[in-house]
Image (cartoon, rainbow, N blue to C red):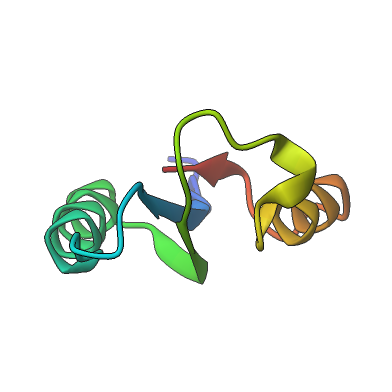
Length: 78
């Protein structure tokens, strides 16, 4: 019998709300639950408060997400 090792997926969470009256917490709880169901390790949680028409370059964490993905820090963005 061969021992098969399954590598735990590493994910990053990206949360976005569009107004200052909204809160990330509901999204965060749901994404953490999904990562848990997947058996994933959470590398990082990125959160932005921006409007829908905001350019990617104006988003606080866009560059960080792209850089970390390019460096292979995580395999999936939720």
